[in-house]
Length: 342
Image (cartoon, one colour):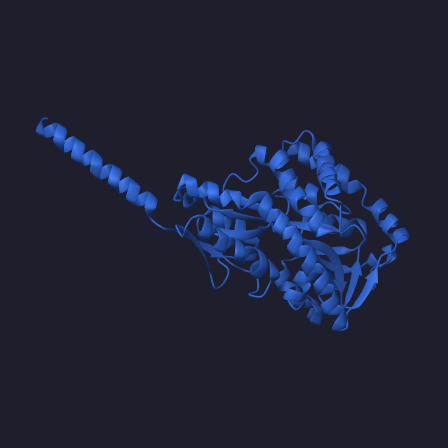
């Protein structure tokens, strides 16, 4: 063996050893957190999932939450895409018009039972939306929905269709904006973190929000009346994603392990958790003095008639975004919910 051969072999061994060492290094991901510390989504869904990531990767991948949000709440998609944080939770509706395909799963009256809707969200995303590379700048790990959106007001009764006319209602998604417009109300697009100040200052008459989030953000202190919409007014879709460069630092085996506890499994857990938290939150807020109105079947039928244009409008947007079979996606979503017993 020549000196050159021995030198080349030694260099190759060093390179291989360095590669193996790099692959064995722990990866710590920084998660940009903006939910309140006691929010159920954090304590009962995300925190256990992050702990599970550490477990299934045998400690090689750990996720650390930041003490406060990196950037602004509505900008979390770009925060992750640009690498300002490695991971974060993004409510898709906080970027109106940017992800139109997601809005199909936010159309009204599909189901007010979060547990029955959980897996349907991921399955619909995986079958119809993921193939169109909807989120090219990030790696989606979980697509799921928050608790069912109902309406909370500072006293206004919205259990009748006429009650909406002229009301100023905070909204979090394009679908909710359109519903409110069709009902004669004025939507105010703001993140949930700003609702308390808006309501206490009289800027808005109410807000669309899931019951558990209303309680977690202490909004029941300023919003004392809830209108329950049978079938659900809408559902905000959320995503937890990771920066592609950060994801690439994780070994293929550990990536696979993380994906196995994410996706549909996460969405199903989210649905179960949100259902339980919705029931508990409504009971807690009623005990604290909140008035609960329920829209009856006759008024709900009137509301459904008013929001009919939303489906046609979404089908046009979906086609423009590259989804030719938009109605097929809606039918699939409905069938998945029905199969779950909703």
